[in-house]
Length: 195
Image (tube, rainbow, N blue to C red; front, top):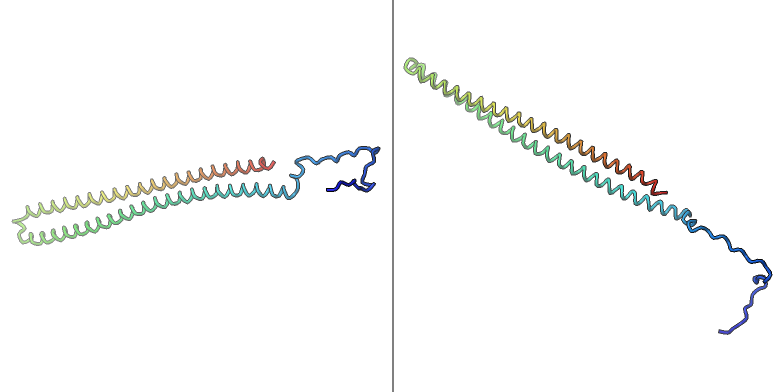
């Protein structure tokens, strides 16, 4: 490089006698953060974070609700299956009872008709058979009573399931209240986070 004397315009040179130039006041370090583009970017980032957090919480709540619905529908299906089984048992028992009663009645009728001819001779035998038939009818009545007891038990189970459903509903409401409280806290924390 060649050395040369600096050439400058006389207007650019400051005279030695001129007063020193005061430096321009510097802007504070935080001033650039107030520019609209930065403020918008920060607000969008905060809103995006809060919205994504809210979506995750709502998905969690939705998952809890779906799980509860699945449990309740499974319980309802089990109870419905029990009811169907009991109804089948009742129908089977009723059919058997009717058949037994018809068979008993037919047998008794035949025996009574045949005994009319030999009434004097077989009167004691007929009484014994009638007593047997009464015992069978008592057994049938006892079976009917057992079926009615089973029906009462099924009704009690249905009441228990209804109680469980009410408890599940109360738990779901409590969970929803807790989630609402959490969301309220998040919403209360949002203005504090902005400032």
